Image 1: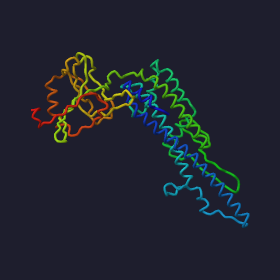
Image 2: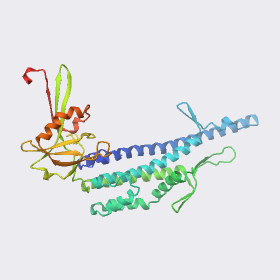
Image 3: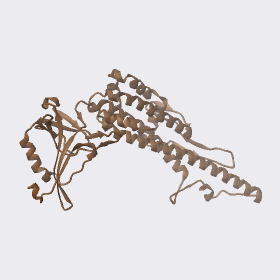
Image 4: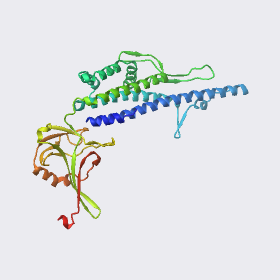
Length: 382
């Protein structure tokens, strides 16, 4: 699944905070697929080894008149991973649980992507336990999102999603292991790798073959995620609440440089208005980001407390935006409150910058501005 187009769309429409969830989704889908592949291959290896072992025992019995199953015989299917001997039946159970967990997590993250990319600053808190229901309500109120709402409603009623949700919740809350692995050889052929019947939330789920169910759920999650992300990307330009968001910041930096040693005097950041502060809301949400002509996206976590507001025509200072919730908040687009200020307050900022900022971290690729270097010992500068 290629997320490059989605990444650019999020950046262009000031909802780049959703990108962190897209990255997490790509990772969890990878874990899901890895778990599915391991289940297929390890179980196939188990069956092949059992068959080979059975044939060997039969051959021994024919040649010698007897054959015995020892403890070592039962360990023939065990795995050697980086020198660690693992019981493959336990590995299969563990990996089965991991598969369903990552599949469920992928669906949960999908809802977070929709929440962040389509609701903007009105997004439901990520820690809200009722986020799915509230998200569906919010999506359902907007005519542009009608197709997406239909797709999400289908998820709620899909048998595959019901099973996935029921299995993961059953294991997580009731804490019983539903997966079993049993094989026999020589006497009969009883190879079972199954998930036991269980009940969750009033729904009964029958016993099923683990590999078959994993294939079914993997195909469902992959297809559903892909289709819903395609529709979500189409709707990102219709995001409900990004009016307060600002991604374009300018900067000016002054640097002392003498005999190969540099020292920053100050860095100041600016937002430009045409006339006055009435062009900005009283609160803005800032995340520096630039999309280069080649499509590369540069951004960074803005960890400065003040941004000055300049009048475009004459470069005069007309206001300041000050951090609202501190620098320890989890905000991607950090909230700033806007108020009037003059050149005197800006001068005080410049004079105290070095006292407040002992180290500076920023991505120059995400900003436009100027850097002035000077030698304090140069007579021409004095």
